[in-house]
Image: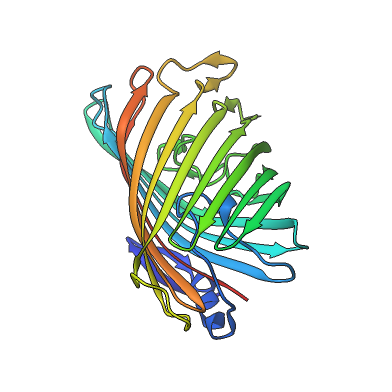
Length: 308
């Protein structure tokens, strides 16, 4: 399969992730939606929604003193389908490029891995829908599972890579939650609550994750609506609260893992009749982590999506 370079040092993302853009010419009307969580993507009955998102996550505040620096890059492909006016199903597949720099015994090590990560499948059912003039309200429970499709046994010259560098986890991880959306002509609010159970694989068990996300998309341009359907520019502000329990290694709790993070995420969306381009940066405003758990610096997101 042909590939294109994106990250340097020989690491490449598959060309098909870019080829998806070629079908934009056939895309249908799209709507604004949250940037940091896929579960709020609107999908009409009998239509598809596709999103391609580049995510760059950097972590470098290391309380342990070992000068750890971790960079995780991912090209995340999302495809959703509207089964009917109530049920939508989604598939998510990331291509990951992970790198960890650390000092061991006075020597600097660089450990890395790249490849397709774990796929995710989930369904969302619209349980409550209230439509009115210029506004609507929806409540939609969702349930899904992360599949162990990524390679979780990659090695380098130093031996087996740690779990934080592997592109796959090896575990089957179910999750469930609920999405709430309130939409008007001027703005839209999306909220999500979810819980993900992380199961054991290869002697490692990640901590379960509880997450609360809120997104506000406010129309900046045009200031006044007309009878025609122009392009739109939205300002976006999101908040992401993430609480993770401690990891377990060979049955023992890891004191240097888990904790609570809070991100504020400013962003922009350019909405056309056929596609949306969007960008956002997740900025940590609070990180209450256990022991020497590595803190996030920032998470950048750049994506495009369309319906067809």
